[in-house]
Image 1 (cartoon, rainbow, N blue to C red):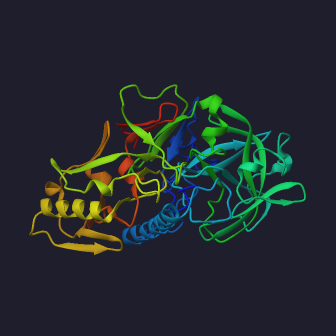
Image 2 (tube, rainbow, N blue to C red; image 1 turned 90 degrees about the vertical axis):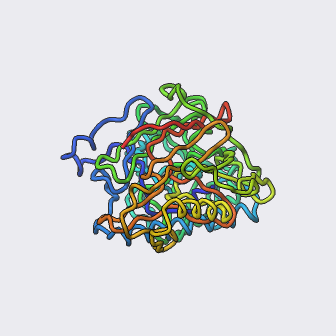
Image 3 (cartoon, one colour; image 1 turned 180 degrees about the vertical axis):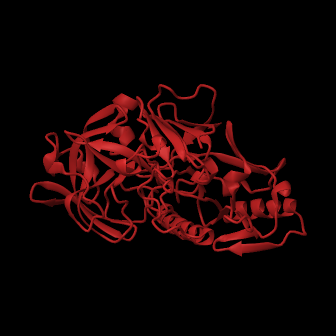
Length: 432
Protein backbone atom coordinates (compact mmCIF):
# COMPACT_ATOMS: atom_id res chain seq x y z
CA UNK A 1 0.00 0.00 0.00
CA UNK A 2 1.23 3.38 -0.98
CA UNK A 3 1.35 6.83 0.49
CA UNK A 4 -2.24 6.47 1.54
CA UNK A 5 -0.54 4.97 4.39
CA UNK A 6 -0.15 8.09 6.22
CA UNK A 7 -1.85 11.28 6.90
CA UNK A 8 -5.32 11.82 8.23
CA UNK A 9 -7.81 9.62 9.91
CA UNK A 10 -10.13 12.62 9.97
CA UNK A 11 -11.58 11.11 6.77
CA UNK A 12 -12.79 14.10 4.81
CA UNK A 13 -14.81 11.58 2.85
CA UNK A 14 -15.91 10.81 -0.63
CA UNK A 15 -19.41 9.51 0.14
CA UNK A 16 -21.51 8.59 -2.73
CA UNK A 17 -25.19 9.09 -2.01
CA UNK A 18 -25.88 7.31 1.15
CA UNK A 19 -28.21 5.63 3.54
CA UNK A 20 -31.81 5.62 4.48
CA UNK A 21 -30.96 7.07 7.86
CA UNK A 22 -30.45 10.38 6.10
CA UNK A 23 -33.42 10.13 3.72
CA UNK A 24 -34.97 13.35 5.04
CA UNK A 25 -32.36 15.27 3.10
CA UNK A 26 -33.21 14.89 -0.62
CA UNK A 27 -29.65 15.70 -1.68
CA UNK A 28 -28.48 12.60 0.19
CA UNK A 29 -30.67 10.35 -1.91
CA UNK A 30 -29.56 11.49 -5.35
CA UNK A 31 -28.44 8.62 -7.55
CA UNK A 32 -25.02 8.15 -9.07
CA UNK A 33 -25.10 8.57 -12.83
CA UNK A 34 -23.21 6.63 -15.48
CA UNK A 35 -19.57 6.74 -14.33
CA UNK A 36 -20.00 9.81 -12.11
CA UNK A 37 -20.31 9.38 -8.34
CA UNK A 38 -21.35 11.85 -5.68
CA UNK A 39 -18.77 13.09 -3.20
CA UNK A 40 -19.50 14.23 0.35
CA UNK A 41 -17.41 15.54 3.22
CA UNK A 42 -17.28 13.22 6.22
CA UNK A 43 -18.99 15.86 8.36
CA UNK A 44 -21.84 16.30 5.90
CA UNK A 45 -25.40 15.68 7.17
CA UNK A 46 -25.39 12.87 4.58
CA UNK A 47 -22.43 11.10 6.17
CA UNK A 48 -23.02 8.26 8.64
CA UNK A 49 -19.43 8.76 9.81
CA UNK A 50 -19.81 12.40 10.87
CA UNK A 51 -18.72 12.98 14.51
CA UNK A 52 -21.42 12.00 17.00
CA UNK A 53 -20.15 14.63 19.41
CA UNK A 54 -19.22 17.92 17.72
CA UNK A 55 -15.64 18.99 18.37
CA UNK A 56 -14.54 22.56 18.92
CA UNK A 57 -12.67 24.22 16.08
CA UNK A 58 -9.35 23.98 17.91
CA UNK A 59 -9.92 20.31 18.76
CA UNK A 60 -10.79 19.53 15.14
CA UNK A 61 -7.70 21.30 13.76
CA UNK A 62 -5.37 19.70 16.29
CA UNK A 63 -6.79 16.25 15.50
CA UNK A 64 -6.35 16.78 11.76
CA UNK A 65 -2.81 18.03 12.28
CA UNK A 66 -1.89 15.01 14.38
CA UNK A 67 -3.32 12.64 11.79
CA UNK A 68 -1.56 14.46 8.95
CA UNK A 69 1.73 14.34 10.87
CA UNK A 70 1.43 10.57 11.30
CA UNK A 71 0.80 10.05 7.62
CA UNK A 72 3.62 12.34 6.54
CA UNK A 73 6.05 10.69 8.93
CA UNK A 74 5.31 7.30 7.40
CA UNK A 75 5.63 8.62 3.86
CA UNK A 76 8.84 10.50 4.52
CA UNK A 77 10.49 7.49 6.14
CA UNK A 78 9.22 5.26 3.38
CA UNK A 79 10.55 7.23 0.43
CA UNK A 80 13.81 8.00 2.15
CA UNK A 81 14.96 4.52 2.89
CA UNK A 82 12.92 1.81 1.20
CA UNK A 83 12.19 0.58 -2.26
CA UNK A 84 8.68 0.20 -3.61
CA UNK A 85 6.97 -2.95 -2.42
CA UNK A 86 3.73 -4.06 -4.13
CA UNK A 87 0.42 -4.03 -2.33
CA UNK A 88 -0.11 -6.21 0.68
CA UNK A 89 3.41 -6.22 2.13
CA UNK A 90 3.87 -6.79 5.84
CA UNK A 91 5.54 -3.45 6.43
CA UNK A 92 4.04 -0.93 8.82
CA UNK A 93 1.40 1.19 7.12
CA UNK A 94 -0.13 4.32 8.55
CA UNK A 95 -3.00 5.16 6.29
CA UNK A 96 -5.88 7.54 6.51
CA UNK A 97 -7.85 7.97 3.33
CA UNK A 98 -9.81 11.17 3.12
CA UNK A 99 -12.89 10.43 1.03
CA UNK A 100 -15.48 7.66 0.70
CA UNK A 101 -17.32 6.15 -2.26
CA UNK A 102 -20.46 4.06 -2.35
CA UNK A 103 -19.39 0.74 -3.81
CA UNK A 104 -21.49 -2.36 -4.44
CA UNK A 105 -19.85 -5.77 -4.16
CA UNK A 106 -21.15 -9.24 -4.98
CA UNK A 107 -24.26 -10.86 -6.46
CA UNK A 108 -26.76 -9.76 -5.29
CA UNK A 109 -24.96 -6.48 -4.70
CA UNK A 110 -24.14 -5.34 -1.15
CA UNK A 111 -23.46 -1.63 -0.60
CA UNK A 112 -20.37 -0.47 1.30
CA UNK A 113 -19.11 3.06 1.94
CA UNK A 114 -15.43 2.63 1.18
CA UNK A 115 -12.70 5.15 1.90
CA UNK A 116 -11.04 6.29 -1.31
CA UNK A 117 -7.34 7.09 -1.61
CA UNK A 118 -5.22 8.06 -4.60
CA UNK A 119 -2.12 6.69 -2.90
CA UNK A 120 -3.35 3.20 -2.08
CA UNK A 121 -3.66 0.30 -4.50
CA UNK A 122 -5.43 -2.84 -3.31
CA UNK A 123 -8.94 -2.63 -1.88
CA UNK A 124 -9.36 -3.92 1.67
CA UNK A 125 -12.90 -4.99 2.68
CA UNK A 126 -14.12 -6.13 6.13
CA UNK A 127 -15.84 -9.46 5.54
CA UNK A 128 -18.60 -11.11 7.58
CA UNK A 129 -17.27 -12.89 10.65
CA UNK A 130 -14.34 -10.46 10.87
CA UNK A 131 -13.00 -10.32 14.42
CA UNK A 132 -12.50 -6.74 15.58
CA UNK A 133 -14.05 -5.02 12.55
CA UNK A 134 -16.24 -1.98 13.22
CA UNK A 135 -19.05 -3.10 10.92
CA UNK A 136 -20.59 -6.33 9.67
CA UNK A 137 -18.97 -5.71 6.31
CA UNK A 138 -19.33 -7.81 3.19
CA UNK A 139 -21.37 -11.00 3.52
CA UNK A 140 -19.32 -13.04 1.08
CA UNK A 141 -21.27 -16.26 1.72
CA UNK A 142 -24.37 -14.57 0.29
CA UNK A 143 -22.67 -13.72 -3.01
CA UNK A 144 -22.88 -16.24 -5.83
CA UNK A 145 -19.93 -14.66 -7.63
CA UNK A 146 -17.45 -14.57 -4.71
CA UNK A 147 -14.33 -16.72 -4.78
CA UNK A 148 -11.09 -16.95 -2.82
CA UNK A 149 -7.82 -16.82 -4.73
CA UNK A 150 -5.26 -19.51 -4.11
CA UNK A 151 -1.52 -19.29 -3.72
CA UNK A 152 -0.89 -20.25 -7.31
CA UNK A 153 -2.95 -17.44 -8.81
CA UNK A 154 -1.29 -14.66 -10.78
CA UNK A 155 -2.86 -12.03 -8.49
CA UNK A 156 -1.42 -13.69 -5.39
CA UNK A 157 2.05 -13.37 -6.88
CA UNK A 158 1.51 -9.60 -6.95
CA UNK A 159 1.07 -9.52 -3.17
CA UNK A 160 4.40 -9.11 -1.44
CA UNK A 161 4.99 -11.38 1.57
CA UNK A 162 1.75 -13.27 1.11
CA UNK A 163 1.23 -16.32 3.29
CA UNK A 164 -0.02 -19.67 2.08
CA UNK A 165 -2.16 -21.15 4.82
CA UNK A 166 -3.54 -24.24 3.17
CA UNK A 167 -4.43 -23.20 -0.34
CA UNK A 168 -5.61 -19.65 0.40
CA UNK A 169 -3.59 -16.57 -0.54
CA UNK A 170 -3.49 -14.70 2.77
CA UNK A 171 -1.65 -11.66 4.07
CA UNK A 172 -0.90 -9.83 7.30
CA UNK A 173 -0.47 -6.07 7.18
CA UNK A 174 -0.38 -3.14 9.56
CA UNK A 175 -2.70 -0.23 8.86
CA UNK A 176 -2.03 2.73 11.12
CA UNK A 177 -2.69 1.40 14.61
CA UNK A 178 -4.55 -1.57 13.11
CA UNK A 179 -3.12 -5.01 12.42
CA UNK A 180 -5.04 -6.78 9.66
CA UNK A 181 -5.30 -10.39 8.54
CA UNK A 182 -6.95 -10.92 5.14
CA UNK A 183 -7.35 -13.38 2.30
CA UNK A 184 -7.08 -12.36 -1.34
CA UNK A 185 -10.49 -12.78 -2.97
CA UNK A 186 -12.46 -11.61 -5.97
CA UNK A 187 -16.03 -10.62 -6.76
CA UNK A 188 -17.94 -8.18 -8.94
CA UNK A 189 -17.54 -4.49 -8.04
CA UNK A 190 -20.10 -1.89 -9.12
CA UNK A 191 -19.43 1.86 -9.06
CA UNK A 192 -22.33 4.07 -10.20
CA UNK A 193 -23.77 2.01 -13.09
CA UNK A 194 -20.55 0.26 -14.14
CA UNK A 195 -19.50 -3.23 -13.04
CA UNK A 196 -15.95 -4.59 -12.88
CA UNK A 197 -16.14 -8.38 -13.06
CA UNK A 198 -13.83 -10.48 -10.87
CA UNK A 199 -12.36 -7.57 -8.92
CA UNK A 200 -9.56 -8.68 -6.58
CA UNK A 201 -9.42 -7.36 -3.01
CA UNK A 202 -8.32 -8.24 0.50
CA UNK A 203 -11.17 -9.88 2.42
CA UNK A 204 -10.42 -8.95 6.04
CA UNK A 205 -10.94 -11.67 8.63
CA UNK A 206 -9.37 -10.04 11.70
CA UNK A 207 -8.21 -6.62 12.79
CA UNK A 208 -7.04 -4.88 15.93
CA UNK A 209 -6.71 -1.16 16.50
CA UNK A 210 -8.86 1.72 15.29
CA UNK A 211 -7.28 3.00 12.06
CA UNK A 212 -9.16 0.86 9.54
CA UNK A 213 -12.10 2.77 8.00
CA UNK A 214 -15.37 1.09 9.07
CA UNK A 215 -16.25 -0.32 5.64
CA UNK A 216 -12.85 -0.63 4.03
CA UNK A 217 -10.62 1.11 1.51
CA UNK A 218 -10.74 1.47 -2.27
CA UNK A 219 -7.39 2.38 -3.86
CA UNK A 220 -6.83 4.63 -6.89
CA UNK A 221 -3.05 4.28 -7.01
CA UNK A 222 -1.06 3.09 -10.02
CA UNK A 223 -0.14 -0.39 -8.76
CA UNK A 224 -1.20 -3.71 -10.36
CA UNK A 225 -4.07 -4.38 -7.91
CA UNK A 226 -5.53 -0.87 -7.92
CA UNK A 227 -8.94 0.04 -9.33
CA UNK A 228 -7.30 1.70 -12.35
CA UNK A 229 -5.29 -1.40 -13.23
CA UNK A 230 -8.19 -3.81 -12.73
CA UNK A 231 -10.69 -1.67 -14.67
CA UNK A 232 -8.34 -0.60 -17.46
CA UNK A 233 -10.59 -1.82 -20.27
CA UNK A 234 -13.57 0.03 -18.78
CA UNK A 235 -12.12 3.31 -17.52
CA UNK A 236 -8.97 3.51 -19.67
CA UNK A 237 -6.85 4.43 -16.61
CA UNK A 238 -8.52 7.84 -16.41
CA UNK A 239 -10.44 9.54 -13.60
CA UNK A 240 -11.01 12.95 -12.08
CA UNK A 241 -12.49 14.44 -8.94
CA UNK A 242 -13.70 17.75 -7.59
CA UNK A 243 -13.43 17.96 -3.81
CA UNK A 244 -15.92 20.23 -2.06
CA UNK A 245 -14.99 22.75 0.57
CA UNK A 246 -15.47 21.41 4.07
CA UNK A 247 -17.29 24.68 4.82
CA UNK A 248 -20.00 23.93 2.26
CA UNK A 249 -23.45 23.07 3.69
CA UNK A 250 -23.96 20.58 0.84
CA UNK A 251 -20.50 18.98 0.75
CA UNK A 252 -21.22 17.44 -2.64
CA UNK A 253 -18.45 16.88 -5.16
CA UNK A 254 -18.00 14.32 -7.91
CA UNK A 255 -15.73 11.48 -8.91
CA UNK A 256 -15.71 10.81 -12.67
CA UNK A 257 -14.36 7.50 -13.92
CA UNK A 258 -13.20 7.03 -17.51
CA UNK A 259 -12.35 9.48 -20.32
CA UNK A 260 -15.96 10.32 -21.20
CA UNK A 261 -17.36 13.44 -19.57
CA UNK A 262 -13.99 14.83 -18.56
CA UNK A 263 -13.43 18.59 -19.01
CA UNK A 264 -12.05 19.76 -22.34
CA UNK A 265 -10.84 23.18 -21.26
CA UNK A 266 -8.19 22.14 -18.78
CA UNK A 267 -4.45 22.65 -18.54
CA UNK A 268 -2.13 19.71 -18.00
CA UNK A 269 1.17 19.11 -16.27
CA UNK A 270 3.29 16.00 -16.92
CA UNK A 271 2.70 13.03 -14.62
CA UNK A 272 6.05 11.81 -13.32
CA UNK A 273 7.13 8.47 -11.92
CA UNK A 274 9.60 8.04 -9.11
CA UNK A 275 11.04 4.50 -9.13
CA UNK A 276 11.26 4.63 -5.36
CA UNK A 277 7.47 4.90 -5.18
CA UNK A 278 6.01 4.24 -8.68
CA UNK A 279 2.41 4.04 -7.49
CA UNK A 280 2.30 7.69 -6.35
CA UNK A 281 1.27 10.66 -8.50
CA UNK A 282 4.38 12.82 -8.82
CA UNK A 283 4.30 16.19 -10.60
CA UNK A 284 6.88 18.87 -11.36
CA UNK A 285 6.39 21.84 -9.03
CA UNK A 286 8.50 24.70 -10.39
CA UNK A 287 7.52 27.67 -8.24
CA UNK A 288 5.14 29.26 -5.75
CA UNK A 289 3.70 32.77 -5.89
CA UNK A 290 2.47 34.68 -2.86
CA UNK A 291 0.54 37.57 -4.32
CA UNK A 292 2.27 38.59 -7.58
CA UNK A 293 5.72 37.71 -6.26
CA UNK A 294 7.51 34.52 -7.21
CA UNK A 295 8.99 33.36 -3.92
CA UNK A 296 12.73 32.70 -3.94
CA UNK A 297 12.96 28.93 -3.38
CA UNK A 298 16.00 26.80 -4.27
CA UNK A 299 15.26 24.39 -7.17
CA UNK A 300 16.55 21.52 -5.03
CA UNK A 301 13.42 21.87 -2.85
CA UNK A 302 11.27 20.70 -5.77
CA UNK A 303 13.65 18.23 -7.41
CA UNK A 304 12.55 14.67 -8.15
CA UNK A 305 15.07 12.29 -6.62
CA UNK A 306 14.83 8.61 -7.66
CA UNK A 307 17.30 7.61 -4.98
CA UNK A 308 15.32 8.75 -1.95
CA UNK A 309 11.81 9.33 -3.36
CA UNK A 310 11.86 13.12 -2.91
CA UNK A 311 9.72 15.35 -5.12
CA UNK A 312 6.12 16.55 -5.15
CA UNK A 313 3.02 14.32 -5.01
CA UNK A 314 -0.70 15.04 -5.41
CA UNK A 315 -2.66 13.25 -2.70
CA UNK A 316 -6.35 13.12 -1.80
CA UNK A 317 -5.72 11.73 1.67
CA UNK A 318 -3.64 14.53 3.18
CA UNK A 319 -5.58 17.53 4.46
CA UNK A 320 -2.96 20.29 4.73
CA UNK A 321 -0.20 20.82 2.19
CA UNK A 322 3.35 20.08 3.34
CA UNK A 323 6.40 21.68 1.75
CA UNK A 324 10.01 20.76 2.44
CA UNK A 325 11.50 23.13 4.97
CA UNK A 326 13.34 25.55 2.61
CA UNK A 327 10.21 25.97 0.48
CA UNK A 328 7.81 26.29 3.40
CA UNK A 329 9.99 28.79 5.26
CA UNK A 330 10.26 31.01 2.18
CA UNK A 331 6.51 30.89 1.49
CA UNK A 332 5.61 31.48 5.13
CA UNK A 333 7.98 34.42 5.49
CA UNK A 334 6.66 36.10 2.34
CA UNK A 335 3.09 35.55 3.53
CA UNK A 336 3.92 37.09 6.91
CA UNK A 337 5.64 40.03 5.22
CA UNK A 338 2.56 40.77 3.13
CA UNK A 339 0.34 40.55 6.17
CA UNK A 340 2.20 43.50 7.70
CA UNK A 341 4.45 44.03 10.71
CA UNK A 342 1.62 45.19 12.97
CA UNK A 343 -0.17 41.83 12.77
CA UNK A 344 0.72 39.59 15.72
CA UNK A 345 1.68 36.03 14.74
CA UNK A 346 0.75 33.16 17.06
CA UNK A 347 0.70 29.37 16.64
CA UNK A 348 -1.79 26.53 16.93
CA UNK A 349 -0.48 22.99 17.08
CA UNK A 350 1.58 22.42 13.93
CA UNK A 351 0.57 25.76 12.39
CA UNK A 352 3.12 28.47 13.14
CA UNK A 353 1.43 31.37 11.34
CA UNK A 354 -1.88 32.25 13.01
CA UNK A 355 -3.59 35.59 13.65
CA UNK A 356 -6.11 36.63 16.28
CA UNK A 357 -7.20 39.84 14.56
CA UNK A 358 -9.26 40.32 11.35
CA UNK A 359 -6.98 39.92 8.33
CA UNK A 360 -9.31 39.62 5.32
CA UNK A 361 -8.19 42.69 3.36
CA UNK A 362 -4.51 41.95 3.81
CA UNK A 363 -4.49 38.33 2.61
CA UNK A 364 -2.54 37.82 -0.66
CA UNK A 365 -3.38 35.25 -3.30
CA UNK A 366 -1.30 32.08 -3.63
CA UNK A 367 -0.41 30.00 -6.69
CA UNK A 368 1.38 26.68 -7.03
CA UNK A 369 3.12 26.68 -10.41
CA UNK A 370 3.60 23.37 -12.22
CA UNK A 371 5.12 22.74 -15.60
CA UNK A 372 2.26 23.65 -17.97
CA UNK A 373 -0.44 24.34 -15.35
CA UNK A 374 -1.09 26.42 -12.24
CA UNK A 375 -3.14 25.76 -9.13
CA UNK A 376 -4.49 29.21 -8.28
CA UNK A 377 -5.94 29.26 -4.79
CA UNK A 378 -8.49 31.40 -3.01
CA UNK A 379 -8.24 32.15 0.68
CA UNK A 380 -10.39 29.10 1.50
CA UNK A 381 -7.67 26.89 0.01
CA UNK A 382 -4.87 28.01 2.30
CA UNK A 383 -6.43 29.69 5.35
CA UNK A 384 -8.37 27.94 8.08
CA UNK A 385 -10.68 29.98 10.28
CA UNK A 386 -12.06 29.34 13.74
CA UNK A 387 -15.82 28.96 14.01
CA UNK A 388 -15.98 32.22 15.93
CA UNK A 389 -13.73 34.02 13.46
CA UNK A 390 -11.24 35.00 16.15
CA UNK A 391 -8.30 32.92 14.86
CA UNK A 392 -7.00 32.41 11.33
CA UNK A 393 -4.06 30.15 10.39
CA UNK A 394 -2.00 29.56 7.27
CA UNK A 395 -2.98 25.93 6.60
CA UNK A 396 0.42 24.60 5.57
CA UNK A 397 3.49 23.33 7.35
CA UNK A 398 6.99 22.00 6.83
CA UNK A 399 7.99 18.51 5.73
CA UNK A 400 11.37 16.83 6.12
CA UNK A 401 11.68 15.38 2.62
CA UNK A 402 8.52 15.42 0.48
CA UNK A 403 6.14 18.04 -0.92
CA UNK A 404 2.50 16.93 -0.66
CA UNK A 405 -0.26 18.86 -2.46
CA UNK A 406 -3.15 18.12 -0.11
CA UNK A 407 -6.90 18.07 -0.47
CA UNK A 408 -7.60 21.44 1.15
CA UNK A 409 -5.52 23.10 -1.54
CA UNK A 410 -7.31 21.03 -4.22
CA UNK A 411 -10.85 21.87 -3.09
CA UNK A 412 -13.11 23.40 -5.75
CA UNK A 413 -10.75 22.31 -8.52
CA UNK A 414 -11.16 19.51 -11.04
CA UNK A 415 -8.07 17.29 -10.82
CA UNK A 416 -7.85 14.95 -13.82
CA UNK A 417 -5.57 11.90 -13.77
CA UNK A 418 -4.86 10.86 -17.37
CA UNK A 419 -2.47 7.92 -17.13
CA UNK A 420 -2.45 6.89 -20.83
CA UNK A 421 -1.08 10.34 -21.69
CA UNK A 422 1.04 10.62 -18.50
CA UNK A 423 -0.47 13.89 -17.35
CA UNK A 424 -2.56 15.53 -14.64
CA UNK A 425 -5.07 18.24 -15.47
CA UNK A 426 -6.00 21.16 -13.21
CA UNK A 427 -8.90 23.60 -13.58
CA UNK A 428 -11.04 25.66 -11.22
CA UNK A 429 -14.54 24.24 -10.65
CA UNK A 430 -17.08 25.04 -7.99
CA UNK A 431 -18.41 21.80 -6.49
CA UNK A 432 -19.34 22.90 -2.97
